[in-house]
Structure formats: C-alpha cells, structure tokens
Length: 255
Image (cartoon, rainbow, N blue to C red; front, side):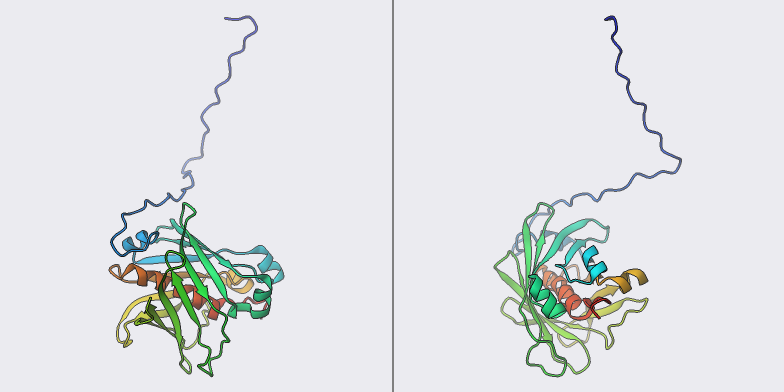
C-alpha cells in the first residue's frame, strides 16, 4: 500500500423508511404504427377512447388577474403525457378581447414535433344574434385542415357541429342550459347528427374550491368511441378548447 494513501469511501446505500414508494415518472409513450389515412403525429389516437386535458396554473394570472397565454397538458387515462399544448396570441388581444380573442394553439408531442394546430378567428360572441357564431379550424399536420368545430345558434343551449375537412356535418355537441359547475362536473354531450344517441362527452371537471375561485385553470375529460375516425377524435378534442374559452375562461379577478 502506498504510504499516506487513503482509499475512497464508498457511500452506504441510502435507507428509506418502511412503506416508502419512490415517485413514479410517467414513461414516454411508444409511437404506434400509423394506419392508412391517419395524419402523422396522431397515431396514438387509434389506441385510446378518452383523454384528459389539464390547464397549467399561471402565477401572474392568479395573482394579478392579467390574462396570459394558456398552456395545457394532454394525458391519457393513466396520467401519461401525450401532448403539450400552448396558446399563441398577443398581449393586447388578450387584454382587449378577453376570452373571445382569436388564437392559435399548437400541440407538440414528446419529441417536440408539432402535430396539431387549432386556429380560432376573432368573432363577436352573442347568444341573441346568429351573425357571428364561433368556429375553430383543426389542422394536422399544420397547414392541412382535417376538420372544423362550428357553433350552432340556439336560444338557450350551447350547441356545436363537428365537421370534416369539406365542412360536412359529422357529429353534434350539446351542452347544458347552465354551465355553472358548483362542486360537480359540467357535461357537453357528443351525439349523432340527429342528437338521438350519445356517443361521447366533454366534461369540465370540478377541480376544487380554491382552484375554481382563484384561477381560470380548467381540467377536462374527453371521451369518444374507440373506433371513431382519428381525424374526428382530434376535432372532438379541439372542441374542448373552444368550449373552455367560451364558457370557463373568465377568472374571478376579471369578473
């Protein structure tokens, strides 16, 4: 042994208290094979019949009441991240137009590739006159329209039509008379064109009194048939974002 040499000390294994469970990190989802006719980046929709949309809480917005660009995480039922979604709009538009503002929402997969784009033009919102009804264009890949969400005029019920890339009607969405969700979920039904059968739903989930009162960060659940065309699944998911802005984006500080 070399004089004066001190062997390095190997740290002992860290001891954890009984019953300790290490935190679970959501695994990156494997990319399934893309079937014919499926836009690139939407392959995962072939394997699910429901998704969760969680809006991130913005501290500046919660404290000062200044509207910021919304950010969302889209997850599967296991809590694994499928996409990140973020709004693109300018400060003046957010301040002047509020929740009626125009926007572009970009969806990125776990590799940072943009797979879905939602575009909402600026239109006046009025339940009394059907001259400026809301609409949303859905693109996948960006620049290629795959469908539209269009508001239908009704004197007291929120109604929308899911349309394909040629604006042909495919499905309907029918909301409740009152969108107040005091301690309960608010359900928007996805139905057939004649509204006779419910095939899915968009649920505004109750997130707790503190979150509901202090922020406009919303959580949604989106359900659709497993065998529904991938493009229409994407458009139903997009309808969730238009519904959020139209009915749930008003924060208490803004009110």
